Image (cartoon, rainbow, N blue to C red):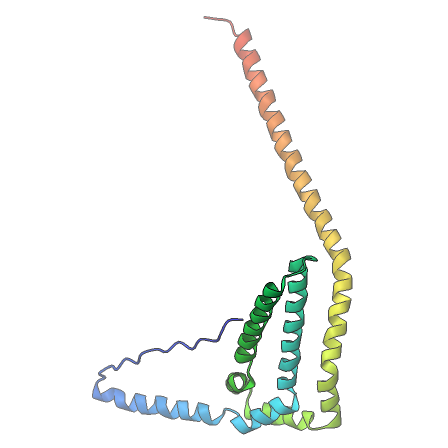
Length: 206
């Protein structure tokens, strides 16, 4: 899990002519108007709370740990580690979990979510979503969406098998067609070479 790195950019000061001051003031005013149109951090905070984003991230973290455990067991392939190796494995799991928990800490992620929501949604849109998610239907949507996603993934996996077989058949047909075309070109080239050789052999010398 890679940490999110924030790259800083150094500011450059340009010396502008006096007549550009009015344009600068207009740009500053436009930027202020744009900032005023952004949803407030408080409204985003309530929206994230109503949609239980933090809980979903916690579930995702648990899934990551479960997948890591399965991969670890698969890598051992039935091998029984020694006590010293078990200690090393435990240290490895602890270090990995510490990294995941640190990088997915809500105190770090909430400001990122807030910035994203503020840059994408208008205040009116946020207020509309808040009004919806405050209702029982909105909360039911939040609670049942993970189940919908899980069932959708299961159904998609069921469809992936037959679809992959069809795609494999298309690929096999393509490879066979390419090989057949190459063989035909080779045969045509050989026939032309034989015809040229026959013509050379039967040519009457002057």
